[in-house]
Image (cartoon, rainbow, N blue to C red; front, side, top):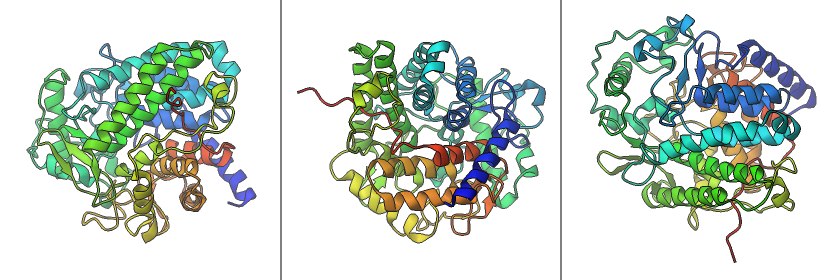
Length: 461
């Protein structure tokens, strides 16, 4: 990217984040999304760490302040004064938060935020504050949310973060398209009907949410949807490794049994993914229906994100970074995926369904019959997915693919930081001035590290 363009984009992205900052957290977008969203806040913190590290820490602490007693980190923390601006709101749940969750990227975000400002983090006792809460969050996912494959189960498409992906179509067909709660669609004031899920989908979404809410958000009660997502599981594994690095930093670089447990847990998650989610014909990971035990053989970006676990050389100085004595952002993730999986994933990413078929990374393969370049998670390119895959291929030294993924961020500022874009034309879709688009654009433009993945410890001799 041109230097002048980068400076303009940094300034514009900073203005978006400043505008969406409430004083305690950042809303995803002031119109369509006026509350605090779980994984949005993690991505926002990753971007804010460069210019506002104190704000990045506050973002995560505020979210974790809403943690439930069972350990779950809620999908939404509501601004109850704006209950009419988003549906379903706090009144639907009868609480200040949603009972659902979102993908667990938080520990990775917290580690990056810590590493960006070691002095400020130490002064606030940031790691000591967030580590036990994040560990409880993971315990919830490994415990109450564990499915038959030993991987966390999502109870609603909203929990996957990729709400309208074709991965969930078959399971949703089993949910009656009827709800007791009237379905309001304030989202259509901010995006066209061709860019948002349809009314029939929303009636199913509401029905699932009602069933889960009426069961007291108990995870041992079947609600008609129980899906294992490769994106969700991957971020859990990466964040387990981040927790290991945190545990070591909190012990001042000495041995810490908690770190060993987190390392082993990450390896167990990846082994289960390799066993239950890999599809050799598609050359990528897929979802698993925990109700039927069947894999969902659909090619989506969710199944490419496990490239984050594919490995890469471990640079010098890693041990110092782990103890918190350096920036901590130049370590690559040690290889956890099964043999040959990284090569197949890279080939799929570069192939005609994804980057080989157009300029940007679609959320659903161009070869899938459900592909739609405008419709929410059915084809549009999302900046958080481009960011995740960019970091993965950088670790693997694939500069060619990194350059392709980085180019997606060139349209962010001209398109007013859209929620997502057409994967072929770059035209903005969804709402504008979207916080994680601005935050991750900042991260791409301001990061000087080659890789920002926490790395597993080398195996014992």
